[in-house]
Length: 530
Image 1 (cartoon, rainbow, N blue to C red):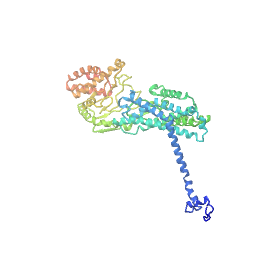
Image 2: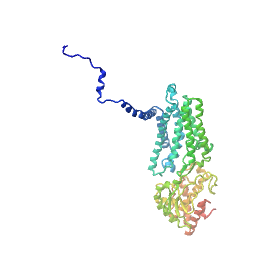
Image 3: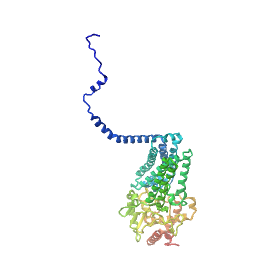
Image 4: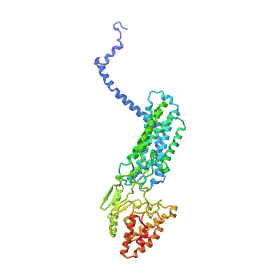
């Protein structure tokens, strides 16, 4: 080293720190920079909690029994409604014909879907004990209700999605069939969703209370038997109606014009809310006293719901006023439910009224008939009817020609068939129930068959008198050969009479048919009862 080279001490490392920033930092600057951080802390904590809850919910959706339960429920409901032949396929009450019928028939399938939801919840409820993590999870600082909420939320999402998807599938079919658009089905659907969620919570709560491998199968069998025992389609009138309505499953659809009453909706919703609360409280309870108190919501729910529910099963349902409102074009009217059929009915309806004008005091309108509800069980049957099978004629004024699209099988019929159906019985409703389905062998042997066939023959001849041509009527499942064997001779005998005598016989038949008094074929042949 040269002596000329000056050697000085090395500058300390800390002296380089100020050189990194040319702007001096005042003592007040840190305080100002930390203030926003402190004010944003609660918002950041809230976002973190939400993010954590969402992450946990996604984990539950992937790893819990909730997705499998939803898939099984979806498959079970669609397989029953779409692949298994039953009353949900038939007539105007089919589950793909109207929105209310779709929601109603889906509630009918609760006989199987609700036990499935309870069982799936029970399987989830014993997960911690089965995996051996109960003590570990109990030692964590996270509240027990927090974990229960995310698990219950996962089940609620998947079961709701499956239930709504089944309804939407039926709804698409309803739209394809020009079904009547309305929102009256919404309460029926909402109570069904609540029933599934309540069932899953109940299963989880009971299984958490009794964490045994036998709990899920016992709950599956018990819930299935409970629903079946109180279902009025299975047990009839053996169980009080208020107890029957505690079941989430509704009976079969009786008519497309009916809807579920508000008392049934309110009572079932209160009962199911109590059931769901009890299930959740059992799920989070740690001590025997807490488990005992968890039973309080279901007891209170039953105490409020049972008196609210109807005592008579006929009061479970009521005519839908919006669906039965009349839509008219001229003298021809149909219900709002069947408004798309008005165009096809108008021409034949006016023609039938013109032909019926040949009679004294002819009818002046064509109107779709709606069976009254509730049916009066105490009403006495007509004189010419068999009480077990016969029903009185609809309460239709004498100046109205009734139309029943279902019974008369008018779907896709040509105009002349429409007209002939309206002229049957000289423009009157049938007195006996000539069902469109094939009669059984027992019915063929009963005296009721004779009564129905004789009336159908008389109604066929009456329609032929106006059109001039004897042809079978639509919508009768009874053997046409038997009807023709009676209608042919009666038609020939009627045409052999003078025109005024023919008119008198048809007038007498119409009068008898309006009151369902006497044998119509006797009236047609002899002008009155024998």
